[in-house]
Image (cartoon, rainbow, N blue to C red):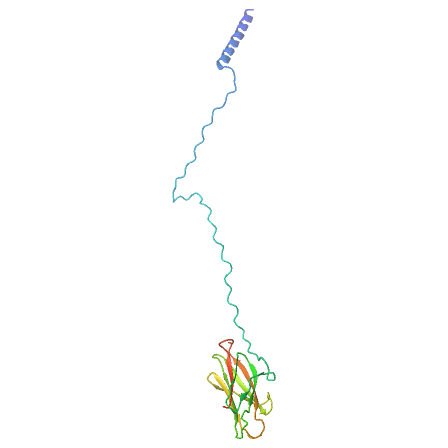
Length: 222
């Protein structure tokens, strides 16, 4: 019995101690956690011109677009065609030229090979003999070479492309052909006129157009 009472007393003493501990601790509440510390400030960059790490600048303005393709080169130069414009049979006819009197010359210019025909006419019908003559002159531009060829037809007839050719005699930048014949029957005689077939033949040189034209002159009574 005594032991039982001692045991009960011991248990009661333990309970009292536990109560004292609980009272010392106080009632259990949900506490709030403390405020976290402030984060540190990032370091501020000191302005410097030698730093290898710099703040990026503004985007640069784009450069001007390149100018479009360059100006085109000059076009190809004038292409000259020196081939014949016609044939002896289709030659251009020049005004008639008096072969026995003074009168206007027949003059023509060009810059290619060409054929012409001209009548050297008998103009003097007097009783005295008046011989016939002509001179064909081809003036050639510098740097160019043309040949002058003349075919003289028979008296009182038309052109003869098959007549023996007379070639121009060069003199400087010119070539000439001259010829004459008698007025065989001055009174009531036959017509002593003669047709000339004249060829201007390109030989060499590459230029044509203004400044590079030849001049053909047919003069009578020379």
